[in-house]
Length: 71
Image 1 (cartoon, one colour):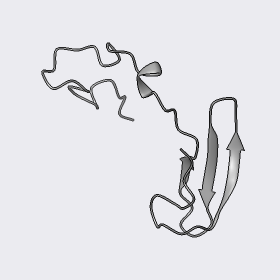
Image 2 (cartoon, helix red, strand yellow; image 1 turned 60 degrees about the horizontal axis):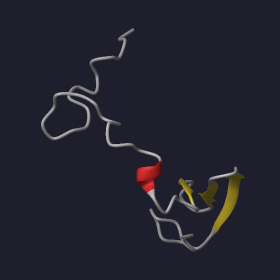
Image 3 (cartoon, one colour; image 1 turned 180 degrees about the vertical axis):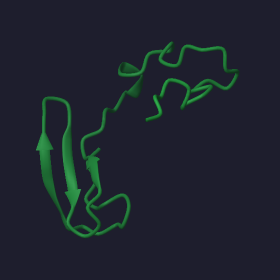
């Protein structure tokens, strides 16, 4: 479902920024936020059940920074 306003500042001043086969990015003219104005109706088609595959009881990342390299 397409939005007719920015999800952050709620203005209706935006332009379409970039489009692809399965996305339509919009950019707010007021705050600069970019969002997918044509999100998938079925997110499970993108994120399978094992998307977060770890031993963390609540799912998600157990340690988001663990794989990062510090310079």
